[in-house]
Length: 408
Image (cartoon, rainbow, N blue to C red; front, side):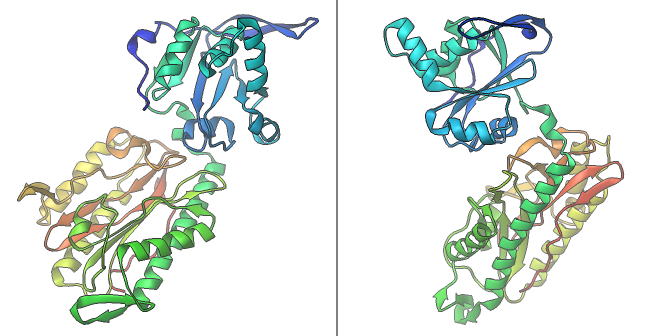
């Protein structure tokens, strides 16, 4: 288990060093360093699990490794398994062999050092005394660094602030991730349309009872073939759809609202898409249709009112008030939340939920958000419409264009 770094490990103030000159000695280059205002940055994580590490290195590794940025120079320490690949693929300035560091320290200590000792000795040898780290930096390693005289300061929120504002290349990657997401939704619609409605509102597809699990597997397989990786795809019908993060299980029924929330990662770029559609296989009741159409109108209201400089919380409140005015207040009834009781949307990029959330920001050009209002009424069902887009100086540009239809 990992915990945030203890407060006692932090030191006030920030200081790092810059290269002043390079002197070549007999054994190895000696770098003379002078004080600088630019803080060093350290990450220890798997780049397959940490968006911060992947953003820093553009190099995919399943195991944790060390990243050090010092005076703008990027260095990573890799196992022998990854060193050669790192030298050819990683977007860094230097790749260091962990085993070489370990052997040198073992010779000095006359005993095999721990991973933490080896890495702390390396960082200390680079004249780093203070560094910024992500808020989820491993506590055990932080303690070891502290024992070696290296003060670590956790940075809350985005470790790389530039991640909040997407470049043209990143928007292109997001569009492709969204295209992969749409492939999954298209497969879901295809299977639902092909399913037969049997007595008792049962759905049968390809001779089998159509369940959330079966439809989810069809979605995920289509995404895999398209170059994506889907995890925890939501296929929730009936009362299950009234719990926004319920993945869904068991038979899907005709004439019932079904939420399809698909959010895969593009395995080539690491970027996510995130779309939700709500459908009925068969015929929707008047109450279901009104819920669906009101939610769609609420999303349209949000999309049309995202403007740079405007507060996201005010927009979320505006959408919630619209729903209340339409007869769908946010409240607790019979022990359950009903109405619109979650956030309007969240940042999207190398993380599926990336800071900031809409309610915690003033809109700025270059931010990418999901916009996903929902209404949930037990006895009728749940509806959520979700699209992805980028804030521009002229408003909000939606990057997704998958169809919104109620009845299949």
